[in-house]
Amino acid sequence: MSHSCNIILVGMPASGKSTIGALLNNYLKDYILIDTDSVIEKTQGLTISKIFEQYSEDYFRKLEHDTIKMVCTGFGKIISVGGGAFENPDNRATLLNFGKVFYLKSDLDVLYYRIAKDSTRPLLQNKNPKDVLKNLLIKRENNYKKAHYTIDTTKYGEDEIIRIIIDATNS
Image (cartoon, rainbow, N blue to C red; front, side, top):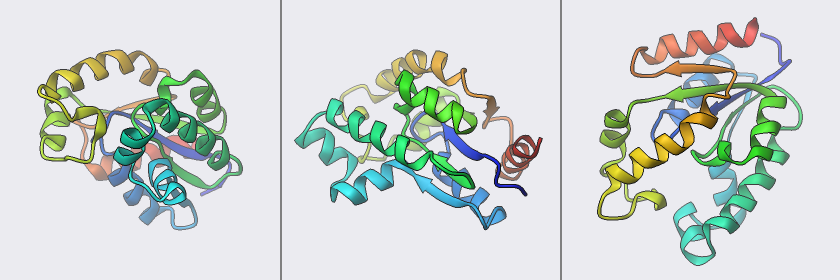
């Protein structure tokens, strides 16, 4: 497979970006897998939750923006970005420019089921996480739909999702 583009995964928290990214990397062994949240955590020496807590969401978004600019250069990468990254018009333009962007779309119930027990997600630490999630989904959906491809993860198994992404990247 040619390295002529990057594969970029966007979507809500728990939509499967990390899982699909890792599986894709098994198939496309000469690609480099990059998760922007992990890069930020490594460079800052803090978890995303701690960055939100100790600094602010704005501070995190600036780090995220700088990280996206940095990792998008070059080709042959599978890049998974945080759920809110695609909200920023600059990030969106960079990502759409430097690769094929796949929105991994999941419905609210599936997302909620997956994250209900995950205490590491800073935006969902409150009394009504399902409402927060629903509002986030409504707010972000318009931008997610600007991705080059939308893949409904509730309709396809992991193997099918991988095949769809690889086919689209080759075309």
